[in-house]
Amino acid sequence: MLEHLQTHRQLLFDLTANYLDPLRGSFERLAYLAGLRESSTGKYQHDRLAAVYGTERVDQVLARCHEEIFERLLEVPLGSQEEELRRYINSWPGSFVDNVRRCRELARSWAPANAPRYLIELYSSNLNALLELLPDNTTTARSDM
Image (cartoon, rainbow, N blue to C red; front, side, top):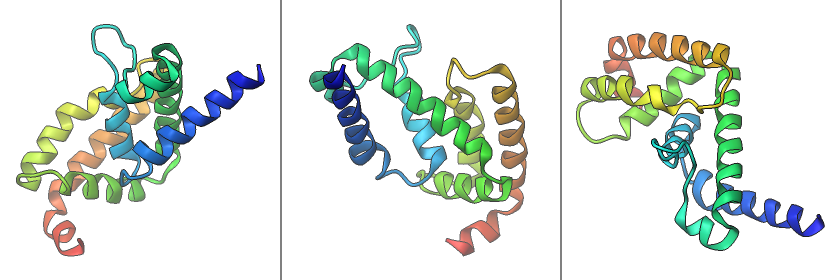
């Protein structure tokens, strides 16, 4: 049991230190973790971590981290979410307005599959509101960066 906990702790450390901490904010982390989820199976895959810790354990830890980041994002005030989402979208190549449109399509898949329905609805509602506000603030957003 102790070995299992130590392995779990090391996996969390590796995931956080090497893959999540370098990312700039919750939206980027949410998108990253959602991108590790295989659409056909719903399982999370990370080849480098799986080579060390095994695919099943990595799937479990990634799923839990995805849920935790999702829940924490929903606890952040909308104004801070707007700033974070703007910063993330500004990091994409291309025009800001086109990237907001692209984000609208992509962000639907960022919610964890096992999240409670009411949290997914809250996330969707918040995201729709934020994505409506962002293009209106394009000149402000660009000058603040």
